[in-house]
Length: 213
Image 1 (cartoon, rainbow, N blue to C red):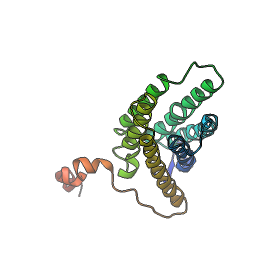
Image 2: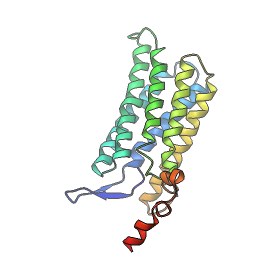
Image 3: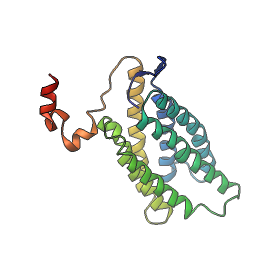
Image 4: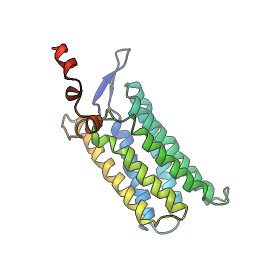
C-alpha cells in the first residue's frame, strides 16, 4: 500500500491507488467510532451502511489495482476489506432495518470477531511492510474483536469506540502518506516490521552481505 508506482509485465505504469482505498477506510472508522460512542444517536445504521457500500466499491477497485501492481499483501487486504468488512456488515445492517433478518446478534457480533481474527492473521502478510503500515493487523484485531464482544454483551461500547478511533488515526496518517507521496513528499512509515522482531537483515546474516560486495 505504500509504494509510489509500479510497472506491470506488459510495461504499463500504474500509479499508487492507496489513497482511493484509505479515504473510505478513514470514513468507515469515523462512522463506527461515532456509533459506538453515541455521537450519531439512534437510527444511524442505514447511513453507516451507505458509507460501507460506497467505500467497499472503492476498496475493491484499490485492491484490484494494487494486485495489478504486484502488491499481494496490500491488494488482497484492500479487496477483502471492501467486500467482507464493508459490504458484508452493510448488507446485514440493511437486512435488519427492513425486517429481512430477525435480529443482528449473535451472528453480527460473531462476524465482527471473525473479521478481527482475519485482520490479525493478515499481520503475517504485512511483516515486510513498514511497521506503521503493519499496525493495521493488530489494531484491527483489537477494534473488531472488541466490537464483536460488545455486540455479544461482553464489553461496554466505549472500548470498541476507542478502538475504531485508533484505526481512524492510523488511516488518516496512511492517507496523508499516500497523498504526500503523489507530490513527491515523504511522510515516514518506519522500517520494515520484520526488523522489529528479528533485527535488521544485515545483522542477522552479515556473511551473505559481505559476499555480495
